[in-house]
Length: 578
Ligand SMILES: Nc1ncnc2c1ncn2[C@@H]1O[C@H](COP(=O)(O)OP(=O)(O)OP(=O)(O)O)[C@@H](O)[C@H]1O
Image (cartoon, rainbow, N blue to C red; front, side, top):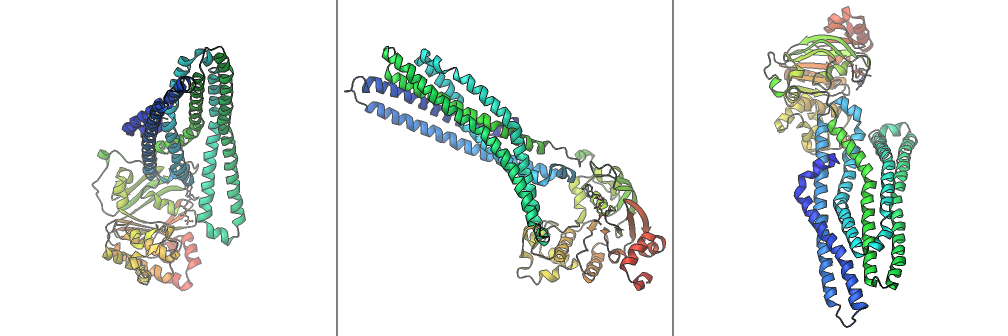
């Protein structure tokens, strides 16, 4: 409730309006039976010559006031919950943007999606219910009970003991449904996870004829969700059924005892009719209130899941603004000092004792077997993760002393997997420089050798890219991804296996064009191909997270058996001896 209140309290004016609307509705709804009783006793069973018109007109006026009250409540409620849900989603999204890779891994991308979409929607439904019924129901109950007592205390005592019995059952059901709601939402996470994998991995699934296997996984997750939902809704369905029985029993009891009172002439027919109405409203409102209790555990689970996103501790933090460093003694330099790194929650470090330094205009390259830690090293530079030990210095300053945006704006990062976004080619290039003009785009795409295929496209830079750039080839995506990282002009360029999808000729052309572009910057290249890195100023050979050798291509061929082995497996005898 605290979580919901922090969003609802912004709309105090609308809440008040809704309360006034409810008040009008309650007074009118309970005023009607009183009028009805008078009509029956004074006119229908009393003086039949009296006109019914005054009663009729007052009733129509009351009904209209009730309708307006209801409309006001509905209007305010819709406005509050729509805005509240939007704000909840915005806050969770904003927080999500600050999360580091570790937190994403912990929370899980599908779960984050469910939280921001489905959990927020459950809270919308719950809050709407509270505003519409949560105000009405208690008011109706209180006023009805007063009317019951003032109308006939003797008749009242025959049905009032039913109320505590109902409350106990409702509380019991709410308690039972809380863990079921938790399991239900977790199962929804599971459904989203399988769905996401099935959609993104559709080609692989088809290539391996694993449609049935995936379909079974989905069916299994879906069935688990069904089971929890059935169990939850079964419990929730008990309440209306229980109330229906109770309301009918109460009416029978009133008629039974009321008939006795009428016979003894201590009560009039109209009063019994009004009494039935009051009891009906009291019990019906109690049922509405019980529905809120039924819904409460689901809302509690959803609010907890969204609050968890907001409360997630971010592992990559900036220093306070006044302690951040903005003066840099060097430009375009990069240094690793005694760096060890273990992924959060992993027991063993994947990098140990990494030391190297490079300055503007130089290229440092990493090579080594798969899993040796090459990509991990470059992920530490823009602080996707923080070192476990040692220091990384960019321009002579520890990366942890930077403002994160400032640090990342110095780096042009081309990830291993060329990820593009839905939109035009130009939109994707502007990720690297938001105000890039056609000239900037041309410059960057000429270097990345993307110009050649873009010029053949009918709409050039305005060509629309499907989700993830799926309407481009792997090599085209990589070339756009390279253009995106160089378009802004950076001090450090990181190419994490970014040339792997390029043919040898294009790979060589890109690197040659890059030389001029990066002459005042540090270039970090991760590669599997010796041909891609053989001209680097410094080649670092990694072996199981440690530096096995450092040197130029020539030096390493002579001094590092591991490098020689890698090179020999890729280059011809002639190239090796050149
Ligand atoms: N997010 C992660 N959480 C835990 N361990 C990870 C994570 N990412 C990578 N690793 C582990 O860290 C080690 C180094 O991985 P890394 O991706 O840096 O290797 P690599 O040399 O770039 O490999 P490749 O050439 O195949 O891309 C591997 O053992 C890998 O299992």
